[in-house]
Image (tube, rainbow, N blue to C red; front, top):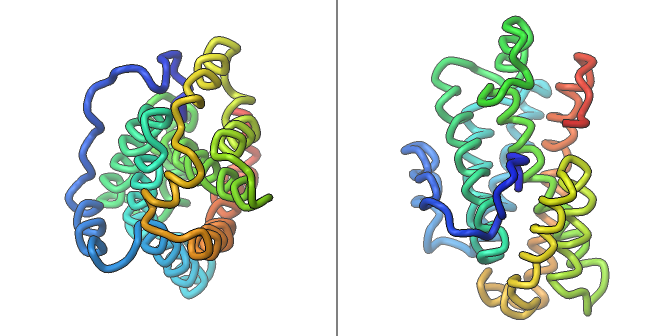
Length: 232
């Protein structure tokens, strides 16, 4: 779904690529301490603070570790987003690995521009773009989920997908994704999976929306400031 491949996003696939050691450590450290949604929201709030403290620069290591936590949100959405989860984890792992050689998001983009490989399959810049789409998909889904008290998860996910990913997909992929949406859990089931209440889930979703927005905008501006469009 995020990698824009032609496979059905809910079809049988190989097990999700495990998180690398650094990301797994972050997940393990937070297990049992708070709900998944709270952990993600707090991590992005911390990342935004670090970015501000670093003069508006986003370091690759903390960025990758924070993004790794979002995989649990894809998991809570069930089989409909299973393929997106697999793709997302693979891209995040690549960026976490790249942090051993590059300090910031700026660094990987500059290097790929130098090598004329920004949009090349498997490049760090391309994977960064895919991770950004994953963050944006969850953000848009939460925004739709909170738009009305009776908004179903199906409606929220369908609208979010249409806004964030569908413009880049072929008709066949869009049709396949649409069919897969019928396997989504209900609104109530999602709240239970997140270990939240109807009241707390609204608060934590808004926290994620607010905290992830400056990160998403920052990534978009990295490309746009270098005259690289976002239509891919």
